[in-house]
Image (cartoon, rainbow, N blue to C red; front, side, top):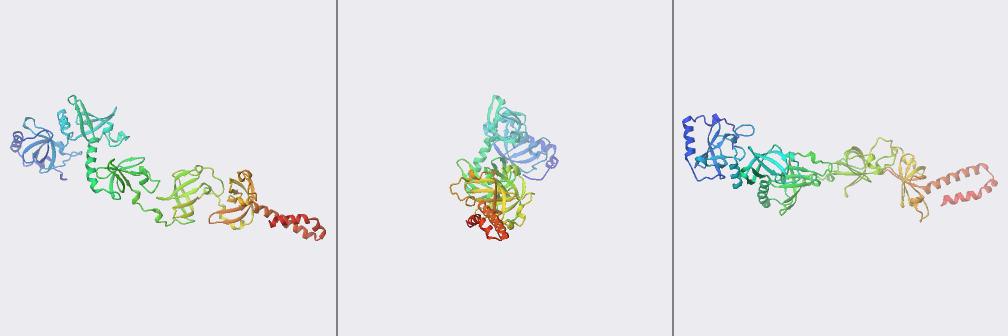
Length: 487
């Protein structure tokens, strides 16, 4: 085949009417042992407005409709002297007629019957979708293709076939051409089986190959790898969970690694993700305390997963979605696909875990001098209550934790009953970790602070009175306060 474009005039500019007559006479008089359906090699020896003269393997000359040598734009694909394969469709009257593809030129029921008997592929245009299948037109001859015989997969969109040309195999011919059934899938299966035998010798697990996307499904991508379709499962398309199937195009070339091969079921699994760099191997710009942009990729009851870069995800616990209030449902604050700012709270590369907190426009109580709160009493509301302790939201918006041992001395106490959610409490701040934004609180410590304050007030009044009589008067109370403080 040549890329050179020629005109009919170029092809037979030196052919006068006498030469043409001789050539036509020779094509009619020469005969060989050819039968309809035979595949032959031929060389173009002449062109007219309607016919191409083909020398068949140096034995005989045959004719072909000139339009079969043109592309869809009407331009010539061949020139005089080019050689190509074709099929014999008729030898009647001593004239041998050829076709490069049955269905491109003039088609008769007899030609279709010959294709049926010889197993020659035909080219057809898919028309409308009808009950059970499609109408397929071989030139002007209407055929039927069942849905199951159109593609290699089930549940495909019918519209991808309409008004397009494909190669078919005639699998049924009856009623003198009034009942013709064709199958595209039969040719696909034959081509796949041939390609399968070749790939059996060359394809191995672990190989890195290139292929072309043939179909996009919600569960993955089907990729053609040399005549056989392999599946890239959705989980193997990208390290990023945010990657959508819609970001890939049909016909797009991709590179992947072979994960598994099952020749008996003709199932081959590929991974595009395996060829991507593991983001945990490059944590540049990812460190504790860093503020970074991310995308919400999933939401669960206890929080949300955020992708910081393809394949690198962190988790925002629901308790870290606001610095000053309790969030009951992550969906009240975030939605999948949201672009958000987060702060990295904790980083554990060994376990591939990132803890995050949401950056909001709310006033952040942790921006003050929090160390000044150490030892002070604060009021707050219990947000969660468990047998191990309670979480309290302080009036300044901070969330702190009161361990069980800082709530009561009663080892048999029912914490959830005695300290229910919504209960107001006064607690002492006994430990602060600004880096982790963590407060440890104590109800027992708050009581000691109150008693110490009461003792100090009493002592100041006693000293101001300056008499032993007043001291004796309050001796019992003084001893009791002192005893509680010592405890």
